[in-house]
Image (cartoon, rainbow, N blue to C red):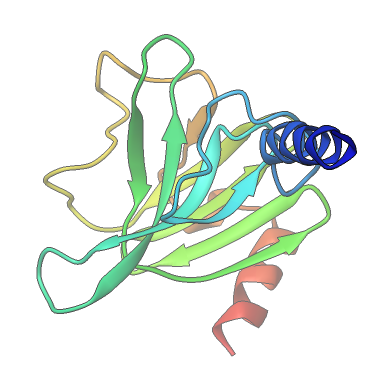
Length: 152
């Protein structure tokens, strides 16, 4: 009987801990699947690994989960590097740059290539959590310095 109570306690504890993200915040979006590499904030933004449609193997993607519908959207594919600095996650990819703020669950996004299937600021599903940038110069000098160190 005691072993059964310990087993139930461990299962309950596992479920509770499993519902928290890497930052210790409840994962509101249940975004912690088997393809998830990194979760920021309350789970709205993740780095995941998916099958690469143009080559063998997998690629990393930055995704965002919506508040008003049960789905996610890829913000950047072909993620090269990412670096957590405080509450911020800096992301570089073949498609652009992003800075995700885990505290406010917001993202500054610069897409540097034409993308056929991706988040577009003109979509009717535009999310208030995204700030779309038109130029690399819209990042602060401090943010650009972080990206520069990531390229080394």
